[in-house]
Length: 143
Image 1 (cartoon, rainbow, N blue to C red):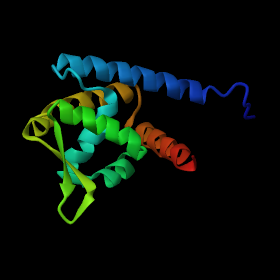
Image 2 (cartoon, one colour):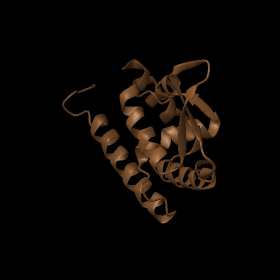
Image 3 (cartoon, one colour):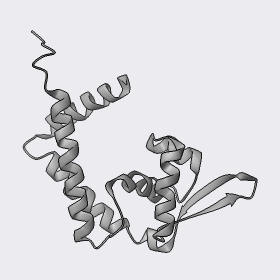
Image 4 (cartoon, helix red, strand yellow):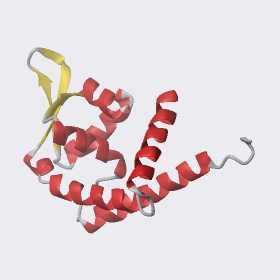
């Protein structure tokens, strides 16, 4: 029988998140990527896939509010990984894009992502990994 008192699922999700963030910080440092934080990862990956994205769309893609994304993007601009410019069709719209320096991060991000995925899936077979992802997506979508 299910018991709210004994349900430790949130505890484990939080611990896994903490461990994943610590691993990402170590890997970023190991790859010499000073100034980058795990919170920058979703933005960079979105821009690796789509070279130029309006700020509003970027916020939607990574599921963060625009003010949070603006702060993260501004730091990445200062570090030289991204650039922002006004959309010629609508000066109110800011377009975010990778710089050449930002594009050079792709191999590092792939290596770091593989390390994270291997650690996350350790001890699980392929069917268990698929089930876990399906269940986590279901919980996330219910929020």
